[in-house]
Length: 320
Image (cartoon, rainbow, N blue to C red; front, top):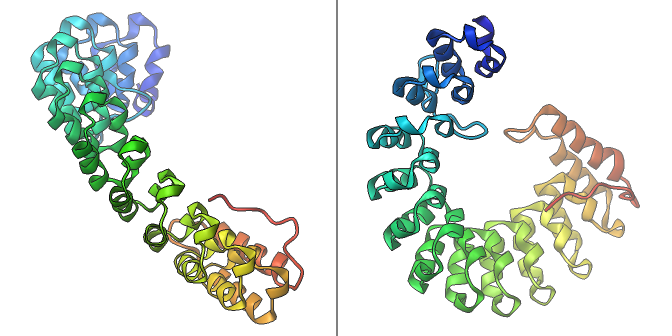
């Protein structure tokens, strides 16, 4: 029993003759997916619902592990009442609800939990309202919205809710106005704007939100002013500044923002003052969520490898 209490999936290794209702309940209370190893004869509506709504201590939490327990519920137990209760506890359970029992109400409940659950909604029940609610909740739901419902008005609402939706928008429907709205909501939407629609104003809007989006700005639009805004926002953006625009003043701003930006400073501009500024920034306490190893590594990069004129060879490039 102690093993089951610590790992409900250990029920898999218990001989069938030793699986009692009490043991199975203990297993699914630890991990709802243990329902897979419960004999059908012991699967009651109460036990199955408890598996879908995993209990841990005094907290009730949705079981978000490698699937959902509803897939292991016997078909004969899937009544309208059970299915609604299951979906209310875990919207992903909609995938295991028989098509005949998928009502507008149960689909709405699932989509309200996570818009991505629209993928399990029958086509006949995918109304404009439900699809828009799904996309507002989760932009990835766009992959499961019928094409005939993706009107210009629908796309406008989707982008207004989350600029990332621009990624899925047909090129023919992308206007300067909707692209500007997208990058104002989500800077990296600039990745999905065609070169023809990238204006100075659009690029500035993106860079003001995230300096590293300078990576997406056409070279012809990278002005000294835009590059300064970028490195003021993110020192790393110095990586995407054309060499001809890298001045001592710009590089100093970058390393004061983030010491690692020294990696992208031309050797000729690595003065003692600039390297010292980079080292000082590197010695600040680690950012929230970073471990002490982060600061140690950062100090090594800035001080040990790049603090002298001509350093920088063999450095590790950061991901965007």
